[in-house]
Picture (cartoon, helix red, strand yellow):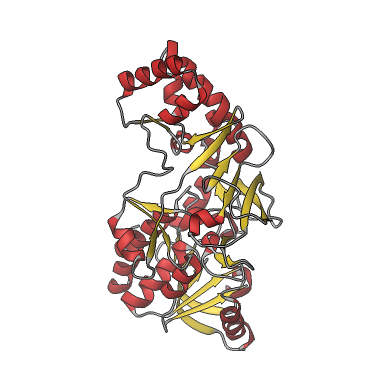
Length: 403
C-alpha cells in the first residue's frame, strides 16, 4: 500500500532513538485537515512537521489504492470531490490534475430505480402522468422551479398534493435510510443532516450542483503524496498518537483525531457512527447504471458504489463496494461520522472547554477534531482558514492568536 515504505522509515526514526526528536509541529491525522495544515506550515512558515497517522497509509478516509484489475478503489467508500469554493479548488489543483465527473445516484423505491436526491424525474418515474403533473405543479407554485426543499419543510407545507408527496418521500426515501445510516429517525438529528439531501424541484439528476465537480486524475492518494512531498514534512504512518506523544518533542500540536480521545475520554465517549465496507468483484463490465445505487428500504446496507463510474478507468470486469452502517464501538471499529443532534452538543461542550485552555499550544481540526460533519472541501477550507487566521499569525507574532 502507498505509505508503507514511508511509514517504516519514519516510524523507525521516531521510536528507536533514545533522545527525543524535536519538531516545530506534531500533527495527528494525515487526512485532508492534517495534510493541508502540514503543507501550509512547511511551505509558508518553513517549520518542521511530524505528521502521523495510526493507519498504514496517508489520505485518511479518502485513501484509494488499485485492485488487481488496476481499478482505483476508494477503500472507505465513495469520495466525490465537489465544492463552490474557488479558493479550495485552486489550492488542491496545485497537487493534482482533475477528471471532470458528475456523480449520479439512483435509489431503489418500490422496485424502481429513480434519481436521488428526489427530483421531478423521480416523480414522473413513480406516479401516473396526471398525478405526477399535479404534484410537480404544486411544487413549482409553492417553492419555485430550481429550488431545493428539505424534506421536513416539505412535509410541513400543507395539505393536498404537497402533503401526500412529502409523506411519500419521507416514508420511502428518508426515514428508513436515515435509520439505517444513523441508527435513529430524521427528527432526532440536527436539521442540517436531512437538508444535505433535499427534494430538488428540477430535472437535474446530478447528486451535487456545486460549481467544481471532479475526481483527482491519478487518485486521492497521489494527491496527498504530492501535497506532503516537502523536506520539512516527516510522515509516520502506522503510528499511534499515544506512542508518539511522550517520545517526540514538539512546540505545537494539531490534533485531527477524535477530540474525546485526546482528553482520554475524561467526560465519556462521544457518539459516532461506523461503517463496514464489503468489496465484491464481478466478471462483467458494469453492474450498475450509475456510480451509486441507494437502498432506502430493503436490506441492512445503505448503498453500493461501482468504482469504474467514479474513476473512468477501463476493465473487462468491475468492483463494487457495499456499505453496512453500524454502531461505533471504541477500539473495535472506526468512528467515521460524528452524530449531530442536541444531546451530542451537550456532550461535546466540556471537551471544547478543555480545548480552549490549550489555545496557542494545541489546535483541533477536522471532522473528528471539531466533531463536525464536514465534506472534504469543508475540511480543507477549515484547515486553510485555521492556518491563515490563527496559526500563521500566532507563529509570526511569537505568541497565540484568537481562533
